[in-house]
Length: 492
Image 1 (cartoon, rainbow, N blue to C red):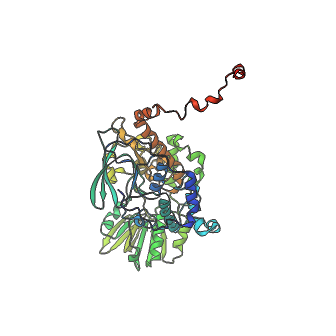
Image 2: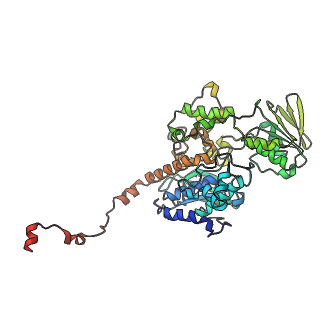
Image 3: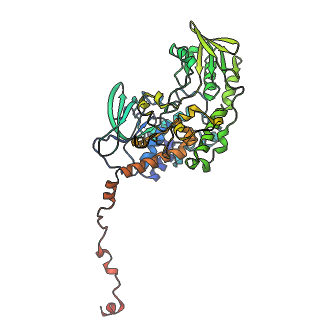
């Protein structure tokens, strides 16, 4: 069913000899052990073909779960994911030596790939991974692991099937503009930053976005068209600074960045809990502890890397406004007039670096389950000083990153939907979908899916494992060596 598995990579590139050797020593993936059922197309359908989808597909196949399909709405690999489209930083914001999609197979990791192409000294000289190199590595990883992605395939809806040998979903796909119905036993949403909601656009900018005078950082933006224009950026996280920098680099006449806080967030509070002992056991922590970490992170703000700030400071036509939330905006022809304190600013375009919501109903394919899903607000009442309504809307995930039903017995099939996107942040303490979460949470999903698939077919596995087994040899193999006693031996 694949639409595009093609790649421009050399099939026998000598630089890949260590990767091929690692795969040889690892041995072939285990044979598919999941029983086949009539009417089931996929045991697992992964929504999203980026780094998370590739990591999950590889890990599932290495666990002997072979009927895995990865879909992506983008028309091809070059336009899939964020790294060559909406990501605008020069370098990744995470450490270069974190475990990525390769899992435990280090020869398939970024370091091995980069050193095979540029040398050990070049890798040692990197402080963080260049964005375009990461995109090239991911393309290579999909190629070397034979991870197929069905591009041009969008999930538009699904429902739990009420009949059949095993629980499953009927999924409605749009494939190159045509509707197609398929079935899957498990769904994984590995679909990026807006996977559990939508880009958050302040209400005062809604009309400007609709009229083409504003956009969210998660939208496609024609930065070349901003040459000679006055541009406003709302927000002070990394994506806002990156968008401001790209606008300046494309010749914007001036860029003004507006932050609500009276200072730039510069305290990386997540760093003090970034050790295996905590993250490996994060689901064992009390809800109050997990909530505290998530709320504290959001309260203190996402810290832009220093180089993202330095990138805009290199331009004399960059202007920073602190403690300056927009009070209103009006449109005057093809211009926006922003009202900030007692000043009015005229802009040709505005960019909202205002993050993403976790409201499931804002995604068309999730609207039907939004009222059935347990949210953090249903499970935990935050103290007044840590109240965060946006965080409270996030789904409360189980230990396999599965959705949980809000009311017991109303939607037990929600456990077959796994969330691997930032909507799970309150539950996991890590921004799912980014590299830091891969080491622990890709295996967590695979373990749970494997367990669920075994238990769902337990009678078949019982029959398989209790079947009569033919012996490898009979007693004639060792008959001549049987001890017959000393007297009998002498008599003979």
